[in-house]
Length: 421
Image (tube, rainbow, N blue to C red):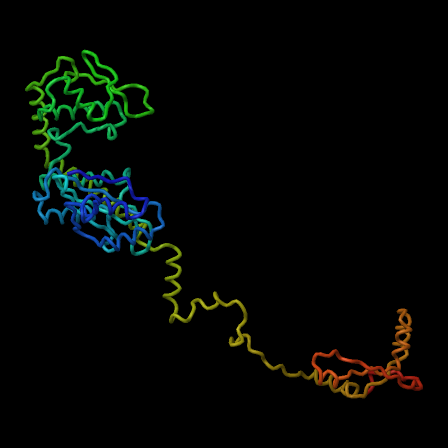
């Protein structure tokens, strides 16, 4: 079994579910050999399409060389449970949305998974798999399952292929040579390669371009476009006179037996690595997803302190102007003090006295202001406002009438002494 993660996930849900479930070439439009094992596809599609994250979902598959009938339903459930727990790493089951779809149309079993990249409790983005952070944990889980259930192990020397089909070739030249050589040796054991021409054909079928051939080596162009030098393959497998021999087959068989003999030690090492990595990822998820976001915590704090949904807490936070119902703003009737009463009694006589005529001093001040003509014309004028005309016609303008009165003899006005009662 191997674990594959697809590179898609930034678009909507239609693309991934159409690939997993639909086939336009079929009369009913359904893909042959596809079966939904877990999840509500319609609701998860709506959830994925509603997300505003760049990465909306994460998809991939558990790929087996075994057929679907060779893996029991109990084993499938155990594998799906273990893989979900590996990616959740401490989060509850109901906080992650995942669907599983089984494929049988390729003659072998594939368990396809689709994760919605969201924490269902707080709505925060949840990234199930980040390659440089999670590959060690996922690979350790894969090795444990292959040993425990006896599935085909891709790391077994007898099961290796021309793995690098150029896209998966390691960038390091030394690792690339070793990967190609191990794959070719596996093909020799299976009887696919018997001479050098078969070696060249296998390299070409793997997507490599032959750059040069010599009696002792074969050079291929480096798939990395930034690399300037070719990859030179040397050894007995690449010599012009190479032919199938029992020595190559014996070498691969011995390496495979040695690998299988150390399965117990490899399981313990994978379990130790898995436990340490799952603890590290669990701590990360607890720090990121254990608490809601800051704005959500603030709202929850205010609501928890409120006595009911109609009372704000704290109250003064929402007051924008004085309330007439607040005790501090109620008007209080002010009482007169003793000094106020004495002052009122001392001037009450003057306040109640009838209005007298204007003094000559006022006339003199108007004359000094240069407005003597106006004051002379209006001093003996009786200006009255005609309210009756405005009452009967509300659209009419108020009228004024000026009646000249006879000038009154002026008398000498006595000064007022405010100090006397």
